[in-house]
Image (cartoon, rainbow, N blue to C red; front, top):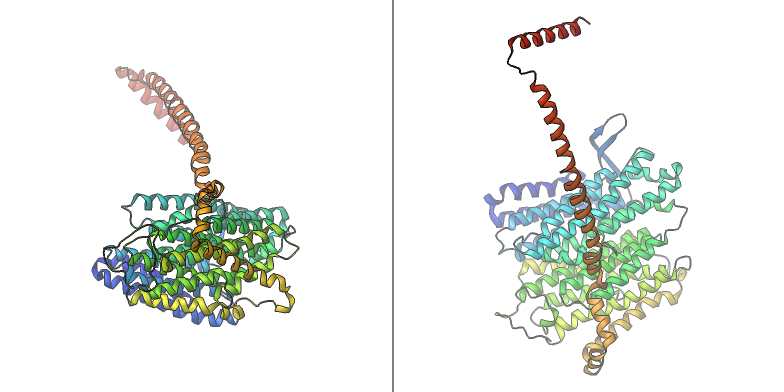
Length: 609
């Protein structure tokens, strides 16, 4: 079964990329969808054996590199963590494949699109099932490559190519940290297996701290934490199904998965790693405060993704790795629902993404409306919906006095902001009237059945999966052991954020007061510009990098020293040598006979000796 889980996406990719022209758009769509659908069924069967029963299976396939000093095996592991992740990867991938058969039906390059989706699924499965860091890194780089290919799928658009390049370059920072990390681990313990990581402290505690930091840097790039987050909002230039699969439910959670997989390493540290909590909390607050001012529906959801990833990383910083995994699984359902519902809205509104140009769509798009509402209330953490069971627990756990209070304050503030921008989407898109007139050339209507089915299944998943997962993935703390004040705090802040958003949207008086306030304008502009991170990176950091690389390394060293000094030196020396050798060519036969005799004499002497 394990080999089938790895093979099915790869077979789907090969079929679509090789036989795409032969089987056409229809054939490519359904071959890939059915292959991933079969993988989805197998992943849930696998979850019953290895997830619920907490069994473990290691499959050693072959030796990749075998020598006296270097030994890598291609081996796969099935345990509760990998089997839980596989259900998410295959479930969301299957629904996105099915959704894409309709959403991308008019695109002439759909076989290539389906091939890329299947290839991404293969690399994600490899990443999750890898038994060692080296094999995991192949999957890690593979999903990065597929992300680049899918963001730039519409390659005739300049912004799509620019965003894909940005995603690739920013992620290289985290990838470099992982490469260094693997080198340090190998030098010290001679193995890259997950089970060997805890041995690092028997060698050197300082080395363990360095490895732990490098892993966090790698996870920061892939999971879009503050500092290396700038690629994720721009990645929304790709088709909406790509955003749902890669940039919401699966690839961006790879960094969180890596930290969870390396949890024995962090639990063995003598130093409490509060910086992981603060990194996640600050990311959460930043993304929530930025999402509240965006007008592109996909960018609002993208920043909400960054915010929720912050919650997951913060849970790891709280030493609650099971809780982080619990929220990761819950988040996959309601975030995929939000993205696919947004895609249905964009599709119906003739590719319009500005929420100011939408309004009163709840009658025309009832299923999409229900999808956004359910996804939003799950995102907000409304009681008894999927997000509530994990998100609120993270916030409650952060009030443990053994951790920095600043983390809890940032997380609870983000709760209010999340409720505010979630209500803003619902009110602007479905309930209120457009603030900027926009008249589509055709009547807005709901999408076809191949889009409605994935939305319906995700609505169900976003409603009940949190309740079901709490017993199989995360065993919750008994309610009596948690202070009742902290249990109600997230709900109170959610209510405050929601009421504030509704009041400001409906109140013309408060709108006028806020619009006329210069301080509010400045704060709004600062938030809309994502805290000016792009400005700092593009105009400050990049400028120094450009100066260093162009003026010092290129003009001074490459052109000034290498191209000027070394070629001229070689030229002068070789010219001098050839002039001396040219004296041998005197044109005198006696000289030629002399040199021939000398050659044979020297050769004979060497042979005899």
